[in-house]
Image (cartoon, rainbow, N blue to C red; front, side, top):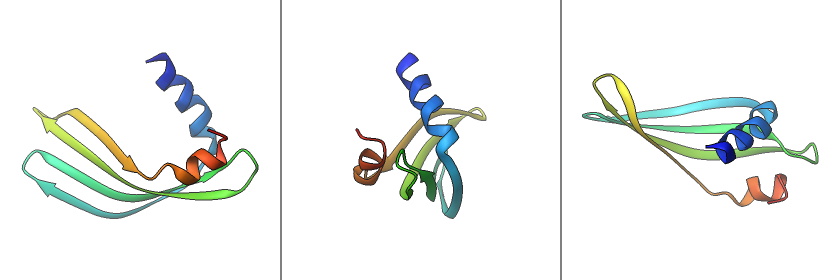
Length: 79
């Protein structure tokens, strides 16, 4: 959890935009197709194309997974 919190602390200030493309629903599972726009450490803007998969039970998110190609993110954040 501490590692995740540290990642968010560094990530969120660099978040400069977001575009939602599509929502797919199947029963209690939902998928969002999105672009997230970030400013890398060198100041260059990057776009992450991603899909977020959620499972909902009793009105609460019980599962969340993000799928994306980390290549540009890794370059922009020296990972």
